[in-house]
Amino acid sequence: MLCVPTGITDVERRAVVEATIAAGARQAYLIEEPLAVAIGAGLQVAEPRGTLIVDIRGGTSEVAVIALGASVVLQSRLLRRITLTADEVRAALAHPLAQIIETVTATLEQTPPELAADLSERGLVLVGGGALLRGIDERLRAETQLPVFVADSPLTCVAVGAGQSLEELHVLEQLRTSADGDRRRRRGTFADRSRAR
Image (cartoon, rainbow, N blue to C red; front, side, top):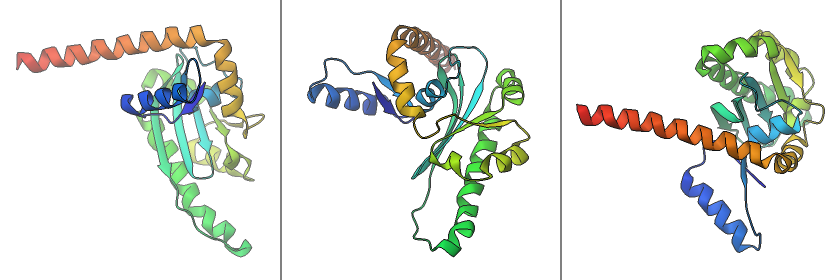
């Protein structure tokens, strides 16, 4: 089971699978990192209710709304690397934190209305090393007006979720097949409309 960023292309997916098999694996399964995080945090990912995941890592941050075993909305942003002294830490965190909050807000704005109601009730879940920053949960709570929860083990959610997803592989495959069919039907409808013009 390999964790991949949300939004990678089909070509990139095939390349990861082929490289894994070439390295000696009999089979390779891919799971998007926000979904693995949600599973590792003990969330019920197969439900039709939305869950907002905010994964703050060393080089990137990723925000996703998860429902029915897939990412519904994705935003990710690469952060700059800079060298800081102890006195500059607070000032240095202000800009990346503002970017994270901006990304969370943009994700909320793109969330379908039927899932947005779930988020106001269930809140957002913080994972990744950045979730351990003192006061980040309070800041996000104030900025989004949503309940904010830090996962029990924010540093290991991706690894734990990837492992647990192997036990529920059949469920993930059913959800993916259903989602792929929905995407194909939507593309077909669009293509039919284009031809009609």
